Image (cartoon, rainbow, N blue to C red; front, side):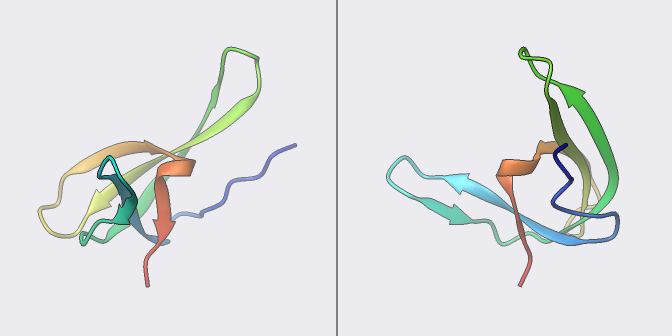
Amino acid sequence: MPTPKYKINDQVNKKINTGVYLKTGAAVGTIIEVKEKYNTRKRIAYYYVVKWEENGRRSEHAQHILVPAP
């Protein structure tokens, strides 16, 4: 069974694809919810609801898009 990479209250940054390379965004967010969803092959994929500190908005991201905040 896969396990989630992050837990609630972990600090994360979002990866940004520039077309040539990946960089890490400046905004830091806090994970407030972990969701399990099934992909087309009926395998579990983890998604996280992140509350961003810079403006207070919330967004949902896949596990592979997030990196731990420094």
